[in-house]
Image (cartoon, rainbow, N blue to C red; front, side, top):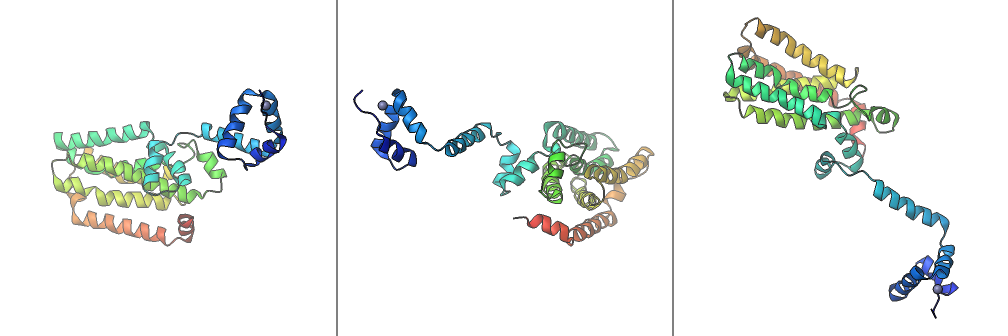
Length: 271
Ligand SMILES: [Zn+2]
């Protein structure tokens, strides 16, 4: 081997001042010549090598983005938000499949039995509330400890996750509604659902989200289920304009109180 990398060239190469064919010939040479390889690597600053290496490790170790993260990213959520929101337990298969089972059952019941229609009207608005129960909290969430300890605002996470799981479970309920024989019934769960979800989010300012969700779901569904088992007429009450207007008023009031809250506004403004 007649040519070796001179000291000056080694220094220039490490500084990034050598480009093109000369850089390629240095690289080709140091692959086969241990002396020049050690000369060139001796010129490379240690901290820069460490930076490059840690960059490589980060890239290789970076977790794959989940489908949820990609969907949330596509609708414009920043990467940090998307990762934390997509970690919501509700968005895991176990939760989604149980919520799907409830909706399939409700849609089937509405086609099959006399009490199926009221049963659908009781269960459909509760499904998104139960989805919210699994969105965030100490019992349900493996990222809870991290998110409580991190500077990321909890309120923002709760709201972003709730909006996401309500959207996901709302899609389930809308699909199930398509199989309900009566069009009026198929739409009548929407306002009660909005009322229950917004009440849950309002309550979540004082109690843990799962507690708020189960309390709201139980307060709505249990008396109605008892009445239904008693053989009383539930559908006409739920379908009445009075019930629908009440639901709309409750939803509007809860959302108004929430959006007037300066803490919430500050949490949602976070770039
Ligand atoms: Zn050499």
